[in-house]
Length: 383
Image 1 (cartoon, rainbow, N blue to C red):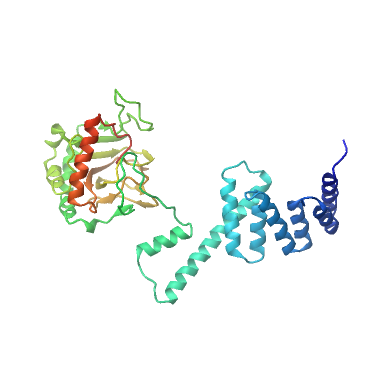
Image 2 (image 1 turned 30 degrees about the vertical axis):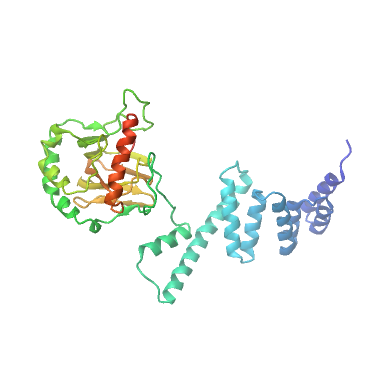
């Protein structure tokens, strides 16, 4: 079979390119119809012709906008010519494309170079933004300004509410709430010592708590690695809106403290309050809660070191007697990497942004949902 003109020109051009005759190689690649863009860009690069190289890479990207070698070559070119914003854009696009394809080994060093460039570029961009605010006299301690810069520069990831069952629109996307925002909370925290004594008394029995995630006999098994595992244990005071009397009788101080909190009261659903236990080495995998109409409160009671809770892009450690309040409809996880057991008092409250009228309507709505048919058990909700 005779070679086509394009095949002949390509073979001759590659031979010239390998021998260092870049002018001849370029002439052959340009004579093809259409030109062989990537080899042409390489020939122009070797000749020191940045404009010709860019034109050839643009030709390749016009034909295939997600061509990984061309994206990386254009990023390197823009980096070399000090167009750092363009280099950032091309590196980001290349790395995103690489994440959805099998990447040839020859391109791995360029991808690594791109990752390093982006880290340096983001740090320089962040420094520029903060210095600009400072020079304008606008430097401030606003957490929202700081978070917006972190998101802009890729320092953190944006996490949003994604409840698995019910979404209530118009609520702020906040990962954690602060203790001082709740006037009733000080009374609950003040009971910590008495609640710890009640907890120690129950733990002295030597019995495991029930697994937090249990298989229901009439439902599919939850897809949770801690299913039916007491390493994540639950000792309920309120469960699905019902008093667990044998437990509440042994924890009067805990029940008095909970009476101060704005617990939802929804037939068959709420209140929900329990001691949540994590044995040493236990990790609760990232997941989402069912609703965004509530917040989850933790009152830490037994807290060894190296235990923490991540909500979205923020991680906090528990401190005895100091509440953590968070939105569990945002991705969250928890772990106990210590050699001792961690136990917290966990309960849910209404979100403060939801009005009394809306709360009444939501109670009626949830009860109407359940009247239509039995609700599914929560499989991986609050921690």
